[in-house]
Structure formats: C-alpha cells, structure tokens
Length: 314
Image: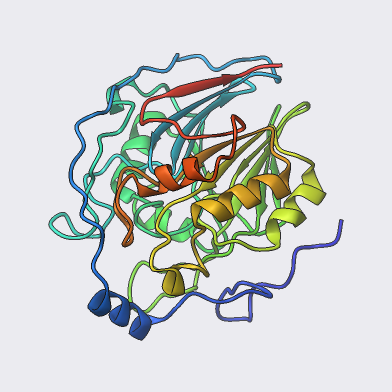
C-alpha cells in the first residue's frame, strides 16, 4: 500500500488536499454573530458497570459509550479506552469552558482495569490531563498518541506514551493498532496550533476491524481507510459540533456526512460519538442525535445513551 499523503511541512501539520481549520478572526466572527441553541444539564443517565474481563474470542466486541468520544472497547482480551474524559469541563480552566451537561455513563470506580488508551489529538475534550493522570496512577496503561504528543504526557507525569504517525502501527499480542488520517487540527493554546498531529485509529485483530474516527471533517480518507483495511466490523463516527457549517465543516462532520462516511466505509455497524455530553458548538445537546435519526440510517448506524453497551458477535 502507498503511504498516506504528506501532512507535515517541516514546522506544522496540515490536512492534505483538504480545507484547513478556520483561524482566530473567524472564531471571533462566529462567537459575535451567532447564538447557540439553548441546552441545559440532563439528569437522565443510567450508569452501568461493564464486566471486568473483556471477551477473549477475537470475533466478539463489547462496546460501551461512556460519554462524548470516550468509548470502552472490550475485545481480544483487552480493555481499551478512547479519548477518556471524566472531568466536569472540557477546558484548561475549572471555572470556564464547555461544561458537562450529562454524567459519564460509567462511574470512575466502576471502570474496569484499562490496558490501552487511544488519544486522537490534543483538544481539551479529547486529551483531558486530569483523567489521564488518574488513569496512569490507577492502571498504568499504555497510551497511544499522535506524533508530537508524548512530551505533553511525560511533562505531566504520564509515562508509557507511544507516538504514531499516519500509517504507522503498533503490533500487540492479538491486536494491531494503526494510526490513520483525520481531517482536523490541533491546539491547546494560542501559540501551538498544528504543532502536534491528529489522527484516527484502526484496531485490527485476526478476524475484525474496528475504526475510531475521533474528530474529523468529511474527506477522502474514509475511502482510503476502506481500501487499506477493508470494511470495519465497527466504526465509531462523530456527529456533533457541526454548527455553524461555514466555520465547522473543515473539522467536524454533520450527521448526514457521518451517514455518508458509514456507507463509504461499508461498516457493518457504526456508533455515533462526539455528541450529547458537552455543547461544543451552536447546535443543541441532542440535536445531532435527532438529525441522525432523520437521516434514516437504518439499524446499522446506532446512537447509544451514556452507559449503554452493545455486544457484537458473529
């Protein structure tokens, strides 16, 4: 297979053959000219306690939506977390920034021992240092991060971080982790924009493919991933933080685009992520879920409540 397109210019990363994220002045324009759809705290989460032991059979996958883009994947003898966040705000501040509007579906004390944590990029709703420190102290899992991010974790006392560039892989005993392209950007402050990479991940076992798209706009990378790895047994596709479209389209899919991605991937089952917990953009908390249902994607593209699980078996 040919390598993925060049995405680093020697100083910064970029989205190849695709629109780049809007800049600071556009962000000011967005905030001054639009008003978000009102949302409020929803006390409707029914917490669950996943089993401590993951399925050992390579053909079985247990997936639990915890919140936002945090998924517990239990497969091939591993407990795997994606972009873990249990904090009350997706922000560097404890008193400002996007506030939690739904509780995590799995309380921290009911989370099984984690073997592997996949971090897709450095935005605060995906790389939550408070949660990662707790996880490192409790379980000492291996952390897989995009190129350039290991240093941030190490500076914060989080060891066992391994970087992957697009197209690079980490072979484990029964699972191989592949870093794949996403259409997004990175920044944790005003002066570090696109200094570290962003990515999705493909988890490959002997019999199954799982694709975690993380944060991404719509692009030709879905077809590339389908061509390289085949149809996923499970795809985790983002549907939220898409309004206003003129600002968000380069970095976040709308629900109808997620359905299109699901079809391009030929995924057997897709589960919606990146919605329903933090209001990151102008649409309301549950608007993405409603619009996805209006797209009539059928039984192969599902939304789960925080704490809800799905068992995929042959």
